[in-house]
Image (cartoon, rainbow, N blue to C red):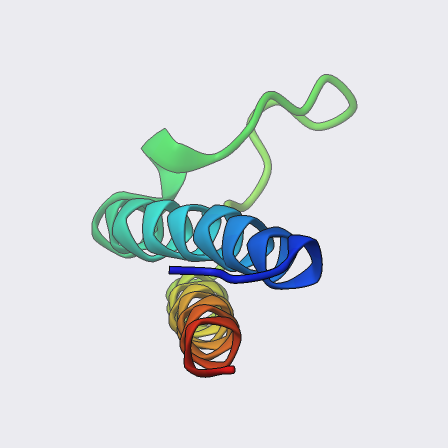
Length: 80
């Protein structure tokens, strides 16, 4: 796997990034399906308008980008 301490850190950082990105990508479609149920507590406006479905879709796409960046970091560390 990783040969040096630096590569080990890149693999660990990449793995954490992949996990965060995958969780983000899997949770955000729930917000697209039910934005009002997925809204966080908002004490200043408890019955306000929930975030739009487009914003949840953009966050899901961001999760995919973050996960792929972590995957690239792992591949680069392992190939060195």
